[in-house]
Length: 173
Image (cartoon, rainbow, N blue to C red; front, top):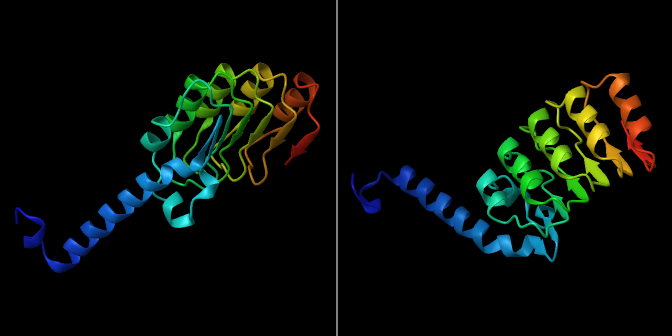
């Protein structure tokens, strides 16, 4: 088959649904921008599951200070590392339940965003001491860190955060 009309019924319906979902996401992306904040939490769960690394990357500007990609399950290191590389004034990052995020992305954010004050990485099961040690080393202004349901951290990483982040007032583990 060479045209949409020639596709078998179920394939045609799936293709139509994918096109409709993509248009829905494009029309909603403006809803997540608010000044220096990108907040994907304003989208429905169905739309959140469609957000990709490239969707996040195309929204980034150096003026962005706050980003929440919470529950964007398909996001990986490319988007989160790009946030770090593009947004040096970042003070708030919530990547909770972005299950594909690894140490590499959080290290990149820590190294490029020294003004980070709040970091939420809840349910990011691929993170280890490497990520938290980088945050402790490069983000001295950290006031809140949430590691809820992250299990691959040892006491040394937590001690490093406590020792290197004197403004820390909330640590959720």
